[in-house]
Length: 120
Image (tube, rainbow, N blue to C red):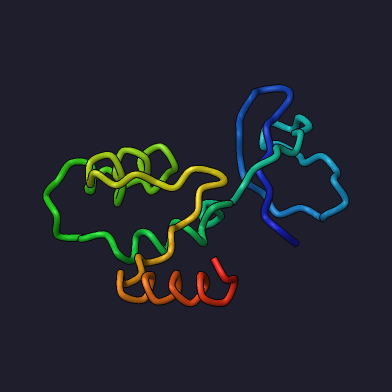
C-alpha cells in the first residue's frame, strides 16, 4: 500500500498514513475521518530532466550569490536569476541557433559558380 497525506476533518491535523489506492478516507488518531490530500513526494520534480543537466555544469565552488541560491533551490525562478547573474540570455520560443559563418572564399566561389551556371 502507498503512503498518502491526510487531513482530519475534526481536529485539522495533517498526517501520513498507508492506505489502499481506492481513494477511501483515512482515520485520524482523534477518531475523526480524514480526507486524502493531493500531494507530491519530495523526490518528484516535473522539470527534473533539464534541471539536472544545468546543475551538472554549474561551478559548485563559486561564491556568487546567484549560483549559491540556484544550487540550494534549483527552481525555474532561481534558474532565471542564475542566467542573469552569469550574463547568459536564454533562447526565446521560436528562436534557433544560426549556423557557423562560412569562409569568404567559399562564399565567393559558390557565388561565381551560381552566376556561371545560370548565365548571369
